[in-house]
Length: 73
Image 1: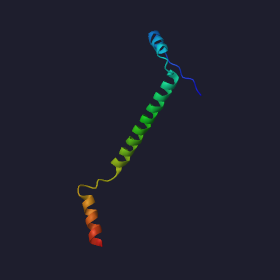
Image 2: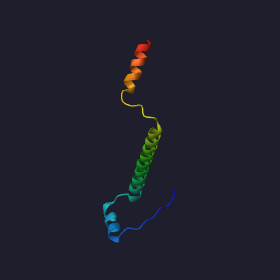
Image 3: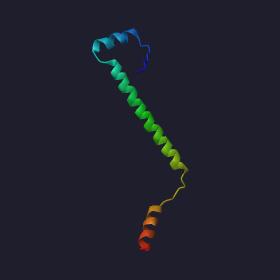
Image 4: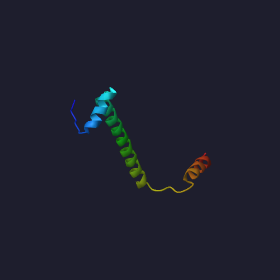
């Protein structure tokens, strides 16, 4: 495990002590959730970038392909 530290106001630290919450675990869960969120966002951005490079098919393309398939049989 690695150690990460940060500064908070003294009043906040005192309030944290009053709660009895395991703050290390809470912060760890928060960081993990934010990383998952960030990775999902990046993946969607990459997919959008890939899709934007594809040629546009235009309106009615799916209908055209279905009609060609039906007429071909």
